[in-house]
Length: 312
Image (cartoon, rainbow, N blue to C red; front, side):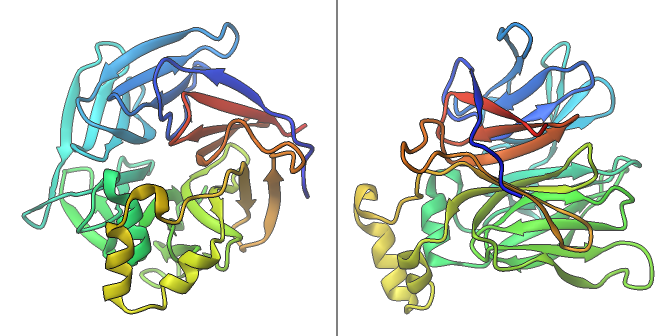
């Protein structure tokens, strides 16, 4: 179903509130491009700086009762205290090589961490280059409770959001450039097999998460761009040349506000297009989504704010 375009925007003190996390105390957390982690109280609109990672925080998850798990594009996988703001690096190298683009994560009941590294070649500031060149060097990684890190999936087309099913029978990762959500089965007769939760998304997915409703929520950062799709079939030399021209001339994401939610069988349950077409959105480019008790919270790589939509 498609909702009416109603959205409440909550400003935060810095640009680029890329992901969003609702903690059990009702606070909404996000990380911004200045390295800060913020806690927003939706009842008052007030914000508090929780920590400074010294990098570029992207995906956020709860890690135990007192910590946040932060995917920092510059520093790797971090554990951040919600009370003291202390920052501990959990993973910054994989197979002896520094991570370039730690992006998003999901935490299992036994504290196994599943997380994405979007590219072996390009960092967050060069995300357009990896997107246009379609390097397919993204990875889904696994850190077990004793700290061992393994590569679960590789060759992904800009690996992005990560989520676990409610019963943890599968983990899924968004392929932003591929417009799919790839699924890796963890238990049952198909354990170890790879398939798709959904293919042919209507745009390029960014962060994903499992909502309190058990659904897998997918942020659609931009609708399909015909030029980008054509470039994906062009020779690599042309793709490289396009990424070397001034950024203002390169393909740009369309201004949109869209999120979707999928059941475990791949069925589309919600398709929320929240941009009034006759006006065009103010808030735009949703890169993070989190459903919590009937409210859908959103973050944006390009906004100094988070936003919320009530499903009811």
